[in-house]
Length: 102
Image (cartoon, helix red, strand yellow):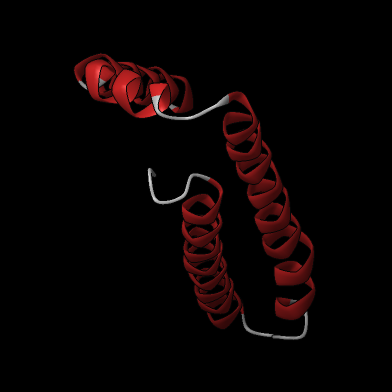
């Protein structure tokens, strides 16, 4: 089941890139190489920080909750909070790196 989900997700991602290829090419043609490198590093750092916060900090925090249902609910809240925080921070950083292009 997971394999089917992965294949379908990959196909949807490829279709989205194919559909928006002209807009993506126009957007990235406005950027220089240092900005593109900054974008790539920003995404890598954001994913790494979000992973550490969710996996290590989130699991450590929910380890103090004795009830399974509350543990899952708290972990879900932590994941949602980390994702919103990471995306907001990434949006601000990309806006500064690209000077408003992205």
